[in-house]
Amino acid sequence: MAVASARSRGRLEHPRRLWVVGVIIVAAIGFLLAKGLGSSINYFETVNQAVALRSSLGTTTFRMEGVVVRGTVHQTSRGTDFSMRSHGVTVPVVNTSSPPQLFAPGRAVVVVGHFARGTDKFLSNEIMVKHSANYVAAHPNRVKPGANGSS
Amino acid sequence: MIITRRQARRPLTSSSSRRPGSLVRTATGVVGLASVAATVWLGLWVTPPSTNLGQLVRLLYIHPPVAWVAYLAFGVTAAASLLYLWRRTRSVVWDRLAAASGEVGVLFCGLTLVSGSIWGKATWGVWWTWDARLTSTALLFVLYLGYLALRRVPSDPGTRAKRSAVAAILAFADVPISYLSVYWWKTLHQTGTVLNPQRQVHVHGLMAWTLLLGFCAFTLVYAWLVAHRYAVEALAERQQGEGLARALAERRAEGRAA
Image: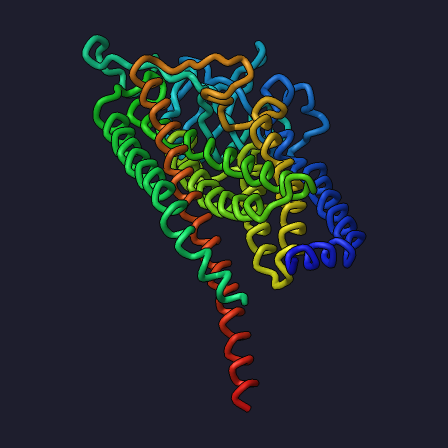
């Protein structure tokens, strides 16, 4: 009985306020998703997209995704230089950070940086390695170890 | 009068409903924790390294199962909240279940963020990045943390239950967004390992079985924790009720003495 009266009191007291709060929360979440997550939603440009957007991007910093081209990786005094390719378009990357341990030719990576003014080079100071959700057993007894690489 | 009713109810709750319930609960906990131990053993010592990730593949057996439990927990909270809001099924049972599952869900969402961050540092090379999957998962954590905070705002139990039920359902909107973010947008995070729309699992042999065991293990641990949290909530409510009854009785006794 006490429960029933508390229930009806709760229902009568603020149904409208509850809805207003609800609408505000929904609007806030919607706003966050639309605006705040903007850069999350377009997390990177692929190499070909970046090249196509070259003139509008200028020297602004963004993330670029592509596959590390085999045979292009070489150590420099500043870091590691290599080329990245996506959909047949290749961009040379001048990188000034130490690459993550899974960085290897043939792997998909995301680099953070910008195009160098007046050249076709991309200057990067951060490399992130992408990997797929395919988990295939390595057979260390059968294949001679090529580090943890799929080379 | 209140006291006699309470006294009549007490033996019923302690003998008939408590014992079998707690037996199932204990069994769930024992099996769940043993399965977690088995998952760790298989994951660390028995399963092979993978072609792309090498030894770093081993967090596969922890991170996706923990993330799944977070989604499941918030799903249970949202479903229980709906059942509470619907007048025909309204019961304090659903409110307690929503609270218990929400709390355990926040724990597992936190574990998802931590295990993912460690795995990310090892494989991607960064502890954190604002891609859509990571951002929406962080948002999920904060939303349900807010839900737990809302539950602690003082008010009468009926209002609190309704208010938090609405919040839980609204917050659940982020679960499908988080899950589908890797398909909707460009992300650093890989796509779904098991629960992907293609229903294709690209995990080999023993690695797949270990992953499956991990999913079952953490789901059982979740059920065990929720059962305990539910029981604690029910006991706390009972204690509150009894405290009120005792206080009333004392005031009445004072009145008679005066």
